[in-house]
Length: 392
Image (tube, rainbow, N blue to C red; front, side):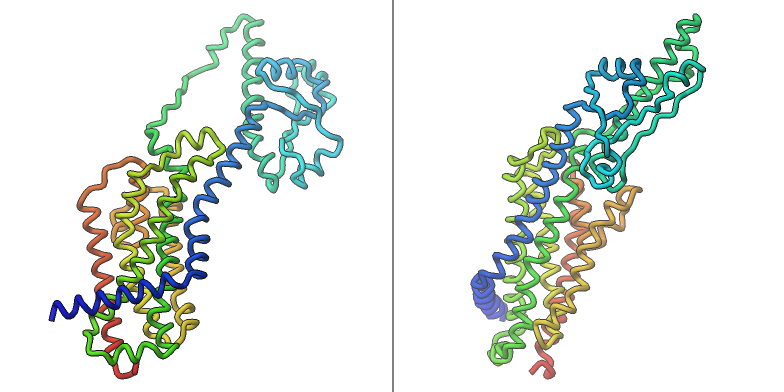
């Protein structure tokens, strides 16, 4: 009985896998959307960071009315910054995102205010709709704070007061995160994209092998064979899970050559996703691929058409898409219950891998056990539906 079960499962597996791989148009779409999208986003993100780094290296400050503050200009130039005059229509250009630097506006009364002992009011103009200009505001604010401290120290020194008397405490920043943890902040998108690769890799195959065959009328002749129902289900499920894992492997490996195209030196230095991390990802995703394949089949076997199955599978798609985002919005760290929730558990474990942490065997076994239990229940439901007379 066991040999017959495995024999029928193997034959159905080979048949379904070949059918899935023959659908080249669907495979190309899945590969383009699931495998290439992640590295493409990574390269585009690195291009954005590279442009920001290039602008920071240029050390340019756009100022309106710098002629009214020669001392401030001297300070900025001593900080190796180049002062550029603002264009005449700088406000409109900032609104239209045509000017990528914030504008420091110095009033004409600057020198008179200083002479009266008053603090002149400087305006730092940017636009929240202009991300390039908005990102440079903090740099100019820090420069102006340094200028205030320098001027205050000089005034105290003229009056014979040590500037240190105004400093009650000194604060030194110390980052406790190791390089791997800091690098994981940039690589946080990788687990999400590989999860989506597993989902969309298995989606079409799972729906086609159940609801698709039922709509085409090819499922009923298959059920007339004396092969055990569990053998048929295991063969179909194995083919769907294999396609999902194939897409997942390609998605994980695609990030390795994508790192060669990073245009930001800082991002390239901290983004270290090597072969070890990719292999860990594949091992962590294997139980999820089995679970998603079985769950999608359980949903689709109830449907009479492929289109109906697509509509019903949106519940699984939304769940798998939204669960990993909890690790982004949760600021209190990982909770123990995260490992009990599929997709969220895999995202949590992959995040630990990126941080260079050692994964406890208990956490891996817990995730594997939950995924296995749900997979068995879903496959059991599919077998039950195939045995029902309603399907025929």
